[in-house]
Length: 416
Image 1 (cartoon, rainbow, N blue to C red):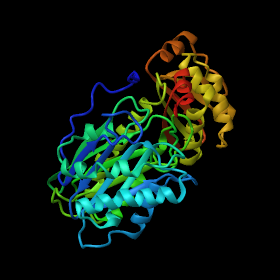
Image 2 (image 1 turned 90 degrees about the horizontal axis):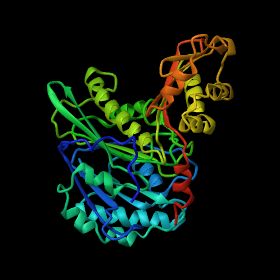
Image 3 (image 1 turned 60 degrees about the vertical axis):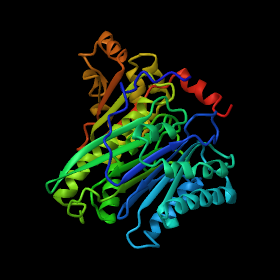
């Protein structure tokens, strides 16, 4: 059994039920051995609104294309329909051509029939090996038991069912007060490798009982992605299957949120940001082979976009990440990564610190720099690299992990 990441939380959070959401999980034998849960189903009550963000990869998986098409059409069929999502681990159903599309139709169609939903209200995701046909019949064979078991499985069960190389299930929750009504937000995620999102991230499913119209729901989700899931990286590779779906059941009974810029939306945004940031950090903490959680903060850039270029250049640099793995305060590699980023920079204004300790300033090593202090910080589990470009007000924070031999071990035999 794979050892749990040393950066993992102490336990899965005690996640309260979200009104209007029922969950179940089952072992379908998609790829793993007998008894390993590998499929989860979530059913959401009538009146649910759905928003989503997906990978921008040009080789998107069949489930991603299906979700995008369904969201672009909106709710069809019965008025005020519910919604559902079914997710399998072990096979990504990516680069599978017409067979992949047929597999999605078979799986989502079986769920629609079991839950009496319009077909366009059943979403799906698949994660795992790319290029192998999805054994849809193994999933459809357990849909009856999944439907019958709805409500009996907790968020942790669902989170475990979608794991691949993950070493721990990922979940988070938050609450907000909207017009005197308490609403809940809870989410689960999977992700460990092939992490450099260009949308949202890996697989993430967030549920709230807040009542929100679809337009502001989508606006909130898309806006929050930039500083949460789009701010993390493990290895610089963007998945074919990255999917983030947000379901708002409306069961809390608050007055409907009709604008993304109102005070009620701001309260929901705060709770969503908390859950999304927590889940994004957990993905990095479970980075394949990771032993260090790394925050890269950039300030003083000419623009926020320039700040992001610098932050992600540092966070994705194999030389920076291996130095961190070796607990070596090699700040010259940070200088290199800033310079190659393509962002506006001035060597003589550049400042760098490790864990708040000055390393470089005004284009040269800081007179306050002490190698032993920086080396001591590099031995910690959580590393902070701060960069000030000295050019403007642009800022951005990214999160990554170190690059160890464990990453090679995991990915060298991923399919075997």
